[in-house]
Length: 298
Image 1: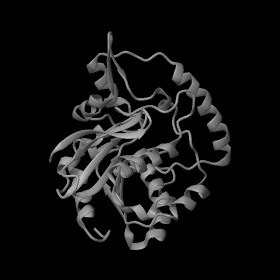
Image 2 (image 1 turned 135 degrees about the vertical axis):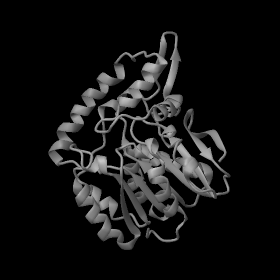
Image 3 (image 1 turned 45 degrees about the vertical axis):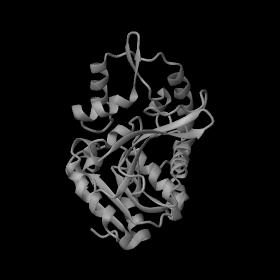
Image 4 (image 1 turned 60 degrees about the horizontal axis):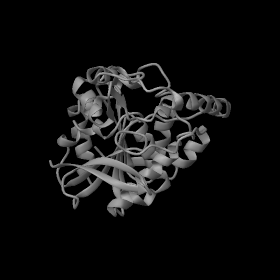
């Protein structure tokens, strides 16, 4: 597979960056990473996927080599959804397939709901469902706003290159440490050289968490608009682990199965939250089969 580093005009002087594999005339597949990751999260998986497709892994705004959101404001997750649309417009795609990991998978759910006629297939890997109570939305949003200001004005930590790599290995909450190879793939896109070492390019405001919250009713109303075949890949190590990531998993699984019928497919694999990059062979065959089949059945 041929890998190309690319940049896409986003708006005025702001920009999105990413990586592409294969001939642009191939069937388009966009891959969207999780929170505080970057396009490097797919470096180990994409070479194992079938030819005949044009793979585009993007750096979301505030991540990797892409521009940051406007200073002084909260980072809104819906802006990331529409960034996906900007990239699709850049390539002139009428329709395409989406693959998303973690928060990137949740963004792909939202995009498929907003633009149902534009998505051919949807694949999510370890994608949580963010659902909040009204009380949590009110209190949580104010808390996030205050933490946002603190994060934005904080002095960046300076690391040696190896310290930064180790930080990336152990950073993910609720998951086992990443492999050395995975951490180095991410580091190549998110480290900035300074006189004293390296700092992270990732926007510091991302550390405060999700700043755009929805109730169960709002999420379900959006998800009713998803029409494309959907393939969920979930790691046993995550779904059985305590924590908020999968607190709504059973509810949403049942809803999507009723909503999509035989266009819905779910598979469990051994591993944890970063299985797609630490053990890509555990998901590559599943993703490949879903990409090439005319139906969603596996």
